[in-house]
Length: 245
Image (cartoon, rainbow, N blue to C red; front, side, top):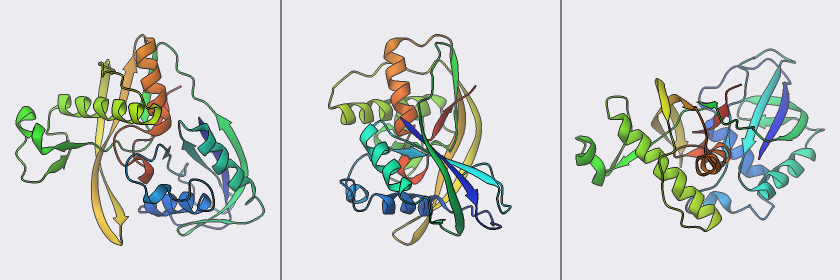
């Protein structure tokens, strides 16, 4: 399930390239007095993802959008309810001052033949035990996937990540199967995020995934991925996916 949040610039805005953690902080602040108030401090998957604030318009009165996604319908309801109570006040996300125009629940429709594209970069880390398998020479316990590594490493890690999150959310033990049919690497990305007051570089990538005929097993995992995000660091704004129309 998704929440389409329509916004409007309350003033002339400067684009902030490092607002990921500020947007995450805004979302956590919204739910701090709810049953999800300790979500930020819990270990493991957070089971939500979100888009950038788009389009990149900076003029006063320009319309903007934010999409929040989660497989947990109750989580979406809680955020929606909290936002509804803020309609008469300005929303502050980092340096942005925004007016809340409307909130609407939406669900992407997956056709049998479809394409899925990255709304925000996918982040994948490869553990040290897989270095030899993929011909990676690094000294760290894990390394971000980069385009000079094999595509097999990326696909295997992203599929494994999706199944782990699915099984954790639904408390199941379904076995991994190949999910992706055709994939197109678009470009690498480097983002800066702040964790515990320290700025870190995060290496990601943009992709397009094409499906000629989704079977039921693929569909349920892809639909889950559209809600929870692909890859890692979804609650920091990475791995948000869109169905291309």
